[in-house]
Image (cartoon, rainbow, N blue to C red; front, side):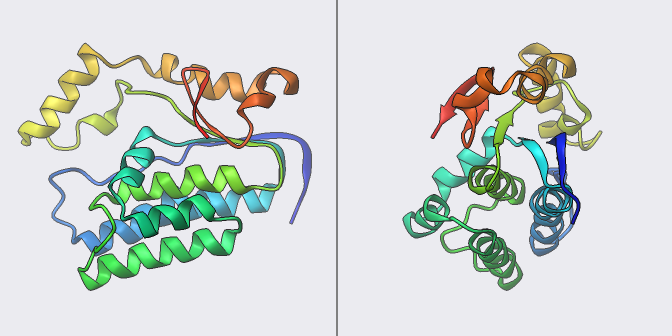
Length: 196
């Protein structure tokens, strides 16, 4: 394991299946958690940077709000990677059993809740943030889906450019330590802490 004391790592793993995907939800859960949570965790552990900025999503908070109180409590009290890995395993296992009792049917949302919580428990300076609703290819997943087109058009009507979405992660990565100290261990959107 290398330690790069001067490196700021920006984790920007963002994958979601199309709303029209025919992949079984068990596969969606496994693949999405593998990329959006495990990929972020593994890269962070491998690099051990000076500061970590994880580009997450407000969908993680949405997913947390849809979880049972017991599962939400497990997220709130997670202190170790083993705690988070246990949550990830439990979600993927529940999806494989087709018994999501207590879990939302949002692989993307759960994976982003895991990524956000990961940033909160790291032993060195880390921040999770949301770029906001952006005009990107993630909004148009299927040329034949009315829902996909609705999100695509909405992203152009009310969404922001990718450059505007990059503002908060870029600021968190490049600002002096004193300027972003209040953000450490929190979830940030539009350069402001939005959740503890």
